[in-house]
View 1 (cartoon, rainbow, N blue to C red):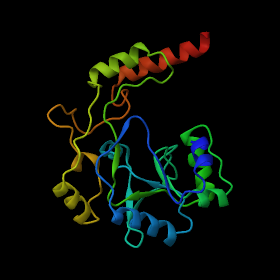
View 2: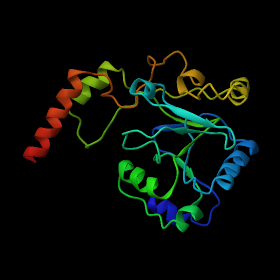
View 3: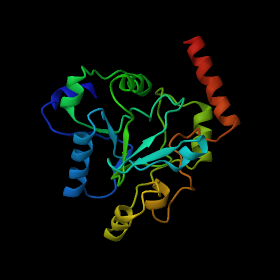
View 4: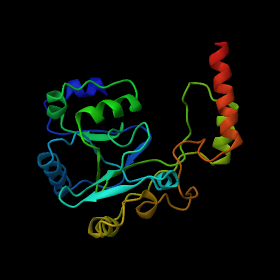
Length: 225
């Protein structure tokens, strides 16, 4: 992320996505104008999130407020290590980060802490255009634990690409009442081969003893490596 930031510091806007995300609709001139207006109106705004809100967040007590002037949602601060001030999926103005002396840290929690010292909470778009793919396999740590393998089987992890939004679906998204949050499960679909809702983005989510088994194996690996 730091390398890309240094390469494109002269650009007006830069968007970061990852290999487990998908752009689900085309961006219009209105989208770009809304993004520019938000940054220009709020000088303490460092980052925007281009993604829909995860439905599973609400099982963890997440809350969002809507700012009618900025046309953005803001997540209420919590004990989470990321997602309030920073996400690795983002839209930014490089010159704003440069003015703040920004340098990307090595993890999302570290960047979230750093962002909280420079900027206000990260804004979530009223009409998002990207989303994490649900139930993707995980390869953290290079070698899968037995617990992770069992969790992926239990959650039916695999490749579930989103169907591109139709014009009618985009119109519904953009014309809705702001009281209705842009929750991914309410606006996106993967066709007939769709995993159960709410979608998860970590195979170990809600897997009970399997998650504990994974934690034990990870701890043993660290102890004996």
